[in-house]
Image (cartoon, rainbow over all chains, first blue to last red; front, side, top):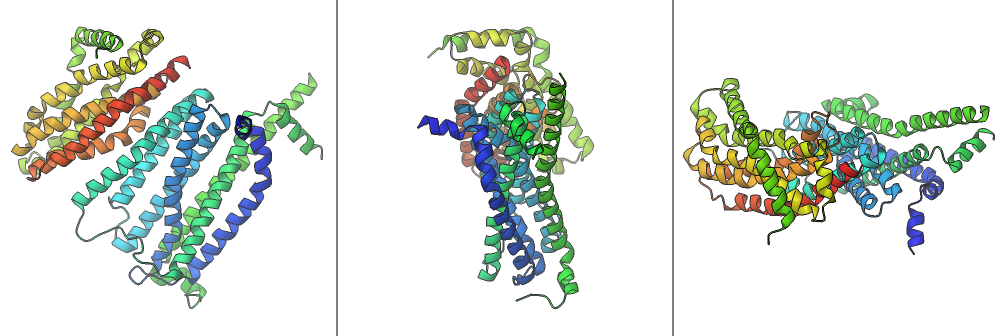
Length: 248
Length: 59
Length: 224
């Protein structure tokens, strides 16, 4: 039983197995996102109050989900790497960090751009945006801490500890920002997320959410594969893999 | 059905076009960059491996 | 429940701190200097200062705590004492806790006790004084606990100036929110029980969790 578990943690096994699935995963992601884009941009009805800028939701919401989920994936991978000392988990964490940070940034950016036509200002300190900004800082902390260490083993363990502390703190941070915002909330504005959505508006959103998750998975697996190649570049299986490729 | 009268309408989006298109363009560009980075990194690794093999075989 | 490891490290660190008496006043002097910046940069008007006083006082306390974090482990790490401490049979948790407590006694505690003076300088309204002290007492303790984790994680990275603040800041934010919220509630005539209770729970939580994580991070930094 443990044999299976440890096989799961073998970089080589992962590399060989993921290679079979990755093309399909990428293709599916492309399909879902393309469909969602076309539908959302051109065919979904516009919002009664916000008009066409409402369409930004099709990027904003999926990225927000992935921003948060991505952090947990990173943190859980880190925890697994510390507790069971599985190197592959370590590589998952390292690869997941920049992807999650990018989605957090996209969520903030699209949120800000959406804000301008909706409330007249690019930036507003409401609970959601503020929490998301803090999440970005949490990501930056993990990434920067990791890069600061020169030795990979130390770098990953330190980053994993930090990610874990972040995990404990994320609910605390979100709750406290929420509390803070309800105290100071100006009477007028409440962060709009498309109040009640017509199915014609919701369906493309669903497509995009699924598409983004698939995209995340595909990119993550791709990055992990490259990380494996990098860390195992001196082993015979990697060398043979490229040698035989070159001589085809 | 298609929500806009013409293609220029589609771009303009009743005045909101700049916001919508800016969001989509920047976001999709970032996602493309995220996707592309491993490609470049792998190319470098392969280059390095081949260089190493070359040196090893000379020895 | 006197734990010999705790007591030993506690006494040692406290003694060291007292011997470096000059350093003890640093957080306080820092606080005074930054407080001068506030009216200089904003306005000397009493009424406007009192509006921002709760938040400003808390922000400065946060910064003072942040800047003093280095003293917790760095010196012992540099001269090898930390390694020695970690070899001892006593659980590292208590020894780390002892260091944190001393750190707080030397930074957060004096600041909290002097809070009324600082409050007066920023025209803090009357009802805010006691809540300020209470929230600072609990809050700075929590900040020391959280800071210990960040400090332990960045120990071998001596040259990275802003790395520690970058890492620790997001965790400090909820403390800031509830700390200044406690003071503001009092000023607005509301009961401070709920924000104070949150401060208490956060303190309890990190009192339990932080020394463990910091100990783990220390092992990482030292064993390498």
